[in-house]
Image (cartoon, rainbow, N blue to C red; front, side, top):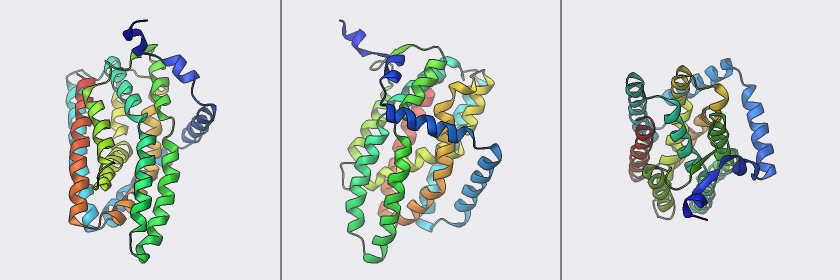
Length: 280
């Protein structure tokens, strides 16, 4: 058998071979998400905006400000691609393949990060230790919701008529570098910079993915092929307020602001590259 055939990922086979527990959990999660009304989502977004305005510490605000500027660039890129007529089914397929690749690494990253955070919290003063332990438990609970989300990307590809793709050559260098950069960061002493990845992605989906969903609908992409983006939008919108609390707690020095914002710059540059290549 040629190496090329070995590299082909059969989407139906990959979905059907998924652990039954994960499949059941995804089904329950999607059922809950589909019951959430637009009115509830609007209220959650308003609550997030209020938290951004009134509940952010000065140090954490510097991280939030960095993300806001970067995400404006995302919207500008997509608006430009729309004017150029480059928001298309084929571009979306390329994007979903990158989503599959990147999201398949997220649970592993969360496990490593939580292990390191658990040790880090134990080094804190007693008054912060109790609060840190509370955040740690909440982080573990929320990270469980990310397990199996690469299957959502595969199902969306299936809805678009894609049967397989090359799991090597169809993955952009930007996607590979994004995963490699975070894998490396989690092994280093400045691992708290990983918050720049997790917060960036959650704020991006909570506040800006609705625009991407709108653009896809405008070019005829059916709602049942937008599950990966929509489910993340709903889940991350519910998490984003907690992300502010996490930033308030962990971002307690200029040094931590710097390492998080430095990683935000890395993540943003690579994610912009993914979008630019997909919708080209």
